[in-house]
Length: 305
Image (cartoon, rainbow, N blue to C red; front, top):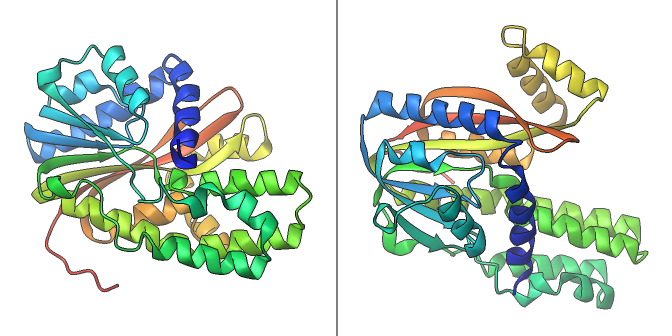
């Protein structure tokens, strides 16, 4: 089993205990998706759900009321089966696609990153990172389904595409007393490569949608430790008109884009954005996520990059 798949199984197993905790978030987000998408089209033929996992964050019963069929996709097949069981979905209403979204699932360069780092200099590891991303630069997923879907829903995934697993490897290296400056160097090198990966991922999503498709993207932008001053501040800002939008803009101006922010911004730059909304997601007892959802329509526009 690959590192990417292992990581997502752990993530989904953790999430599977959260069905009750996420009930308010699931209700609010699903209602938003349905209310906004049905303004565009009353009934959809085929919905693709990207990164569905156990689907504790989106109510699949309600999605099926506006879509004739749902394709559930994730790298973790066991999580998809859990979603089917939770919602008691009938086989004629769903398709299942076990998908590696990055093409890196079987890469030994990635799966053996810790051992390779211990055997090679940081400069050599930089070349290995270049080689790693080179091997996936032309990767496409679900190629047989291009242009098939008139509704595409993307669960929070940008922060999970490789980088979270890579950070775990860096943590292992730190525990093994790998030099901190070398860790910073490798992290910087890896982050340099992520925008191109996210752009390719987004282009793949756009190509899966048909010419008149509705695209709903949900992305985790901020994470707050519950009870901290920043947590209290963001809760207060939510009561002020444009409070969260101003916080978001100020953060971007000071620190730049995070992966979740960059991913949804890049995707929306090639679609017509019809609506957007912030959601609080009580991820667990210790963490609150601030999530952005955007509802978009596909249109013909040539990418310039």
